[in-house]
Image (cartoon, rainbow, N blue to C red):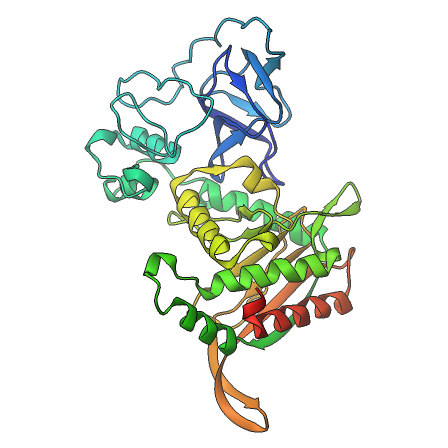
Amino acid sequence: MPSLGADMEAGTLVEWLIKPGDEVHRGDVVAVVETQKGAIEIESFETGVVTELLASIGQTVPVGEELARFGPDDAPASPPAPAPTEKQPRVADTPEPAAQTIRPAAPILATGTRASPAARHAAHDLGLDLSTLQGSGPEGAVVLADVEAQAPSTPQTPPAKGGLSEMRQAVAAAMVRSKREIPHFSVSHTIETQVVSDWLALRNADRPPSERVLLGAAIVKATALAARSVKTLNGHFTDGAFVASDEVNIGVAIALRGGGLVAPALQRADTMTLDKVMTGMRDLVTRARAGRLRGSEMTRGTLTLSSLGEKGAETMTGVIFPPQVALLAVGAPQVRPWIDQGSVVPREVTTFTLSADHRVCDGRQGSKFLTTLEDLLSNPEEL
């Protein structure tokens, strides 16, 4: 069982996507695990043939405990895992879908209904038949929001202790640990974003809405390039030491409809084109809200970006996601008086606040990061 967050102690196995005898390659999705932050797809760390499934559906497995075993290509397959217990989640009375080495866009039930793991579990808890719901997810898949729309107005499940949801408790635990263990310092800088916004408007003029690049994507790309330039902000602090990352994987903070926050990583964002960054961000948001994020996306982030969007407060200070050492908070763009070539003119400006780990870097490096970010956003054609 991999650790999918700094505060994770165990996960509940909700679905196997492999069976004894299947050939699995490194990176293949092999199981779905339920954590406090939702259903996460687990990828294989090894290549080989599945010889034994050690965990049963519905079993809560501590981090670090074996889930399955692989062997060489000619290894004999062991008998299937024990039959599920009564605590196993069910969808109506249909049998489990056939195990597959490669996961489809969403689980396909025996009835032919596509549904995300989170939607399937919510439907079970509410006693809803998934085949009667209209899906709004990829390829018509039923997602959590579709199930919640059909839920009775009275909650079926009592709230967690203190009135907090499990998701909110998980976020709270991570943030308490972060503020307790990481000596934060913050550096802010207000940057004119009128140039990049105007450039994007011209670039998007002849494009359909689905192909337009938003300001958020340009900020993600510029952040990735700035992180590549200031390496002391890109990596992990573990076992009492900072390890700089060779990759720039920008965690994108996403607010979930049911409450809570996740920050899956857009991997190697510094090497992507703007169009690919925009596509990747849309994909992460869709899958995060459908409960279909992958384990690697939850653990490989090297620096996180949290944005208030197009409207809202102009300044925000963030809390670092351990074991990362920096988080960039982006306020909502504002039109403000701005001095341009000696004249005061209205310009769109955005305030960026970098929270950083003082064990790893200092204000000078934080300032360099923000001024590098400003240079990149002032020359958007280079992104």
